[in-house]
Length: 349
Image 1 (tube, rainbow, N blue to C red):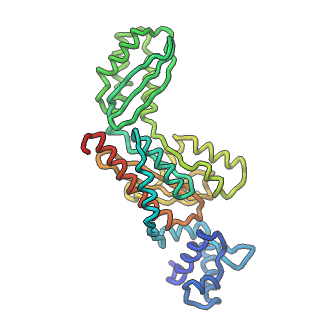
Image 2 (cartoon, helix red, strand yellow):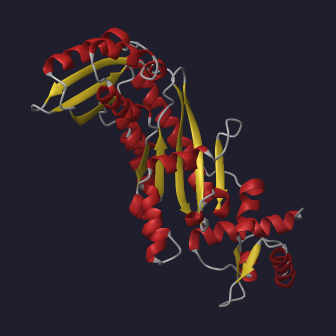
Image 3 (spheres, rainbow, N blue to C red):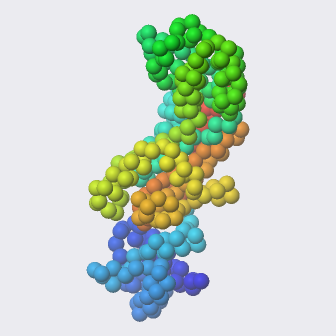
């Protein structure tokens, strides 16, 4: 356990380093509130170094925080900073733009958060468990291609182009649409997904000699609806704060940013329901390509519509107190905007 003076020294070193990027020496600490002689401060800095909380640079007598020191700071000393009125106004105005569906808000939130922090941001929408299928259409493009469109009661629209099996006729398409409308529309999406594997294959056998091609079409279309798509904002910001200039390493990062399934799993591993905001530093993130970075994830709740998640990926020495303060305000505004949109969909506005 650190003494009060050691904690104050560690706090000031970390807050200064995360702002300036420069090592911090004893003279600076004396001038900025540490009530002790220069010799005493140097001794305390050496003790913190021996504990693995600070590192000594080769170029000066100053110290910089280690990843262990940053972890201690986050767990014991971190207090989110107040957000300025100007920042609050910027966030509020960013969410005033017109949105056509829920995913537009989720996608925009990643871009807004990235712009505010200058880091890479992620946004994952509320859970799908309560959504219902409210619309299904098939639009012919030509003799062998169609656009299949599904709509949910929460304003999500999915469309996909399919090549039809050779044996499928225009009359078959009409039958297919009728089956979906009769048996799946107005059903919860989880029920839809279940019936596509149980009830629907039996029904299709009554109408089609070879129903597998149609089942594959349904599978592909509805699978995209159940994907937990992670929207990424500021992907190229990685160039600004990534510590290494290794081209192969950066290529790995970009590949990860483009892999929605991997990102979803990465975000789901962070934090828990009991701890709505979590900070993982270095190896704690669980991906070797992110070992010199930090990931802040925060859950948000939309009453009656499930839970979503936003996250910020930045350097391990980011100014955590400023980022957390900004994230709290941002999350509240996002919850307000999503809640208002859901009320509009439910006819309660």
